Length: 204
Ligand SMILES: C[S@@+](CC[C@H](N)C(=O)[O-])C[C@H]1O[C@@H](n2cnc3c(N)ncnc32)[C@H](O)[C@@H]1O
Image (tube, rainbow, N blue to C red):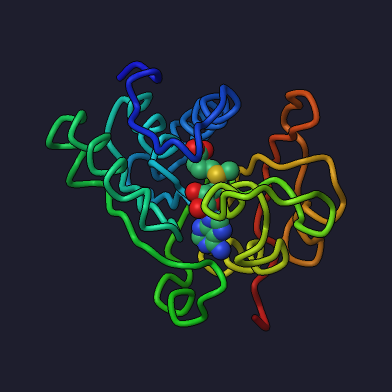
């Protein structure tokens, strides 16, 4: 569907970089040896645009789970989902949860070939929060911190898994080098598109 047709709440609208992320993710997935038998997690999924745009770009559907903290996005996710053909809809599942939740992490452990994410961009101690709490949760790491975000990515991925994440050029937001080898695929202003591959999981 056309990106302008996505339903979104007033407190958060995605930007063009989100679509670039979906573009790169679909190329990566198409090149995977197990495609289309791969499983994807759209972490911090909001209205679902990243995972849905990935599916829209693939020649065959893959399984995509969406993890989002704020239930306020659910109605928008459901309306966006209804725009997709049935064979795609059965491949998409929304989970409401927090990436800091250890029980959720235990449940999702080692499940995914690819984690794709456009998470919050700012640390709350480095910028001034606005008055809208829901918007703040979208923009700032206030319901979980970057180390917890990366731990969730690492644990939820298979041993040879990858994640593709939009982040900022800030050392506190980058993947931890003890768990990932990573490089910057692209830069959009001060946003980075990072590809991070899981390092040895032995001992974790
Ligand atoms: C920058 S927005 C991006 C939303 C969507 N991925 C997009 O590109 O339009 C970040 C999202 O992360 C969610 N979020 C923030 N903290 C979270 C947490 N601890 N666990 C899960 N989701 C979280 C927010 O509610 C918000 O939907």
